[in-house]
Length: 164
Image 1 (cartoon, rainbow, N blue to C red):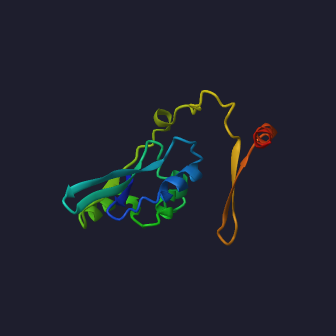
Image 2: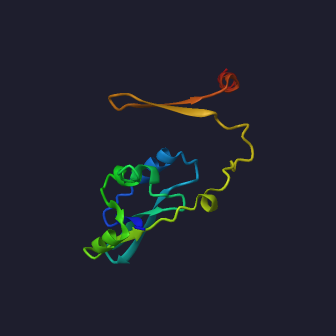
Image 3: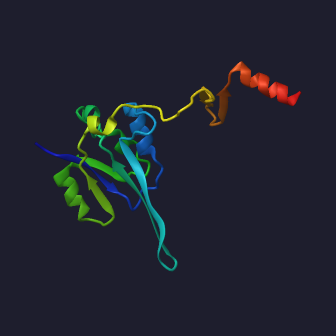
């Protein structure tokens, strides 16, 4: 059986996190869970006037290489949405050969372990009574973003009483 993986050229990863966001959306992962995560290496000084700062996307145990998408001949969602075009998907043997062409690349062969990695999702908040209920974001066609927080009437009364 052919093993598949992700070859990531982290020299040019910008850390935009589009791989993280698209994966969370595609798989419906809750807050605190990722299928792929962008990690920072740096910034730190190598020598005077030379810094090291790498952004390295790392698949987690929740990564199944988008089995449903790839079974239909499509790329994993993280590869599809990579804005810097630094991710490649394919057979490990082919990707390993590409690693010889340049340094600063990593090859990941994720092992999907949903039960070990996922666990039961539980909120870590001890008291949800003072928590705001929701935030709505509307994006207009011309790109303006409006933010609004939905509050109880009790919040409005408190503000009104304070202003009186």
